[in-house]
Image 1 (cartoon, helix red, strand yellow):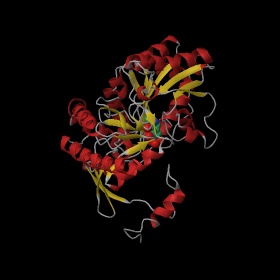
Image 2 (tube, rainbow, N blue to C red):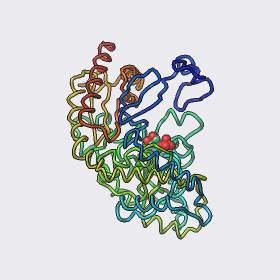
Image 3 (tube, rainbow, N blue to C red):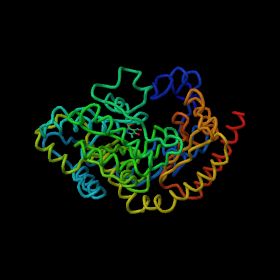
Image 4 (tube, helix red, strand yellow):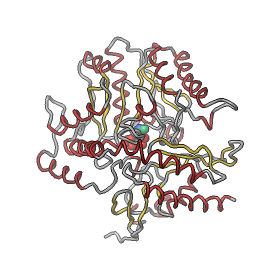
Length: 451
Ligand code: PLP
């Protein structure tokens, strides 16, 4: 039996993702044993505010009993059946209808996966198959962005712009290229307005298309707001200009909604908040609020028509449209819908968090670029706010700061030296105040340590 406090034993056999496992073996891990609302509890009995909704996914919060009941019922009735060979089941039909109901009018088809990475890889294969089906087999190149994150599979990690991931395992794979991220604070010229910068950053796409040849480009893919890249919220001019460029050069526009989707930005999808309409969008995480693994790729009518003309699409997963995951996801969407959770993010908690986030962090001297949209927010740790000088070895200061938060029972994340938060969408104003009171004390501790 594992003793409650014996956390080194907990890593004896488990290789943890995105972790230095040798370090974990030396120092141990924190064991989470239960959760409720916005809180998780560790094996020592500490109550921890989960400012990250797990991994940006527990949108409806922990402990929703209804989802457990639905899962149990579905397991009893039909725990598994596939959707490969001329078969289907009621749970996946219901979920598909619900997804079509909540998406814009011209999205009428959905392909199921088990994760964000699988959604992204599915999208890559789909995009290339589409162009081949409509007579443009040379349109293969997919353009992503530096510091974007699109998952850990070969396709997802290639499309993402995380250099530390590319360094391991010979990535990116062929025909994937990147442009810079639209980070105003970090990349704008002196005296350049946000609007001007947004257009200039979008024009990097046009430059890349012209350099490579539009007849070779299949798609541009971006997170409406870059999540793991540090909650990078582009200027309002950025996405409309990107959409214009994609139309001009006949290139598919893909939104990776794995984080932004299902309410995070105060609308069902991030592209609604950021003012553009993609051809395809990838989702996962909030689709089931993380209660079970499931992802979905939503496809507009134009792309669907091309795919239907292309015969069999030789792609799919054993658990595509898994009945239990589909039933839980359907109920999760219903709860988000019926309880007006997303509307509250847009009109109440989102604006409140924005105001309080600004007030809380603007008083700290190593903090700059304080930003938020819906319940997704960040700031950047900098050496000098006036000159915009970053700390050396980008990322190491963020980890120091994150560990102070973690020690004080508040989970924020460090994406490089960007500190970010994305709490469950059910967080109340009072809970926001409590979270920020702890965050403020943590920042004082951090600044004292840095001085
Ligand atoms: N796409 C985005 C935008 C993500 O943030 C993530 C995960 O954080 C993924 C894809 C990959 O999702 P998963 O970890 O479920 O494979």
